[in-house]
Length: 210
Image (cartoon, rainbow, N blue to C red):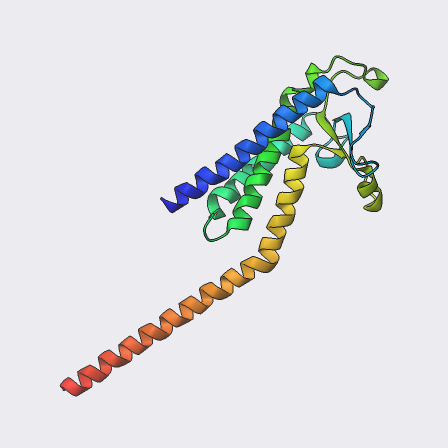
């Protein structure tokens, strides 16, 4: 029953990410104009419509079209397997939530990338004779990407969940998972010591009885 609760919570998180990402992309396509940046927090945060033909943050932007949907599908399957195999909201809450965020982000971009929706809703002008292709991005933080020496600082909710989930998972594996293993080993040692004590008591009783 506890395992099913983890599945329900994980599925709810992933589904929420998919729905929020999907709706936000539709709003971006219908409201924003391609290439026009709208300042929200000055240079730190802008809203700008962009169609990403690569993966997260334009990685593999020039790859053949069939590669990216396939990569998204494989990524979703791998994350889903890890969540099914290792997800436990009680024992590993941070790791489980991290994987659920990553799964939602991967599926969100996979849907967008595979069926070209909601990008196809855009009726404005795209440069260089392009049609409505690519994943919808609209959150512009170019200053951060300039610091990190990374191209294209425009991303979406799914990208953000993938990054946050990856960082949280790394924190879990590097720091928290070691503590969990120490606690588990300590429990096993205590249990083994208790079993040995019980065996010693049983042997003592047998000697007395003899």
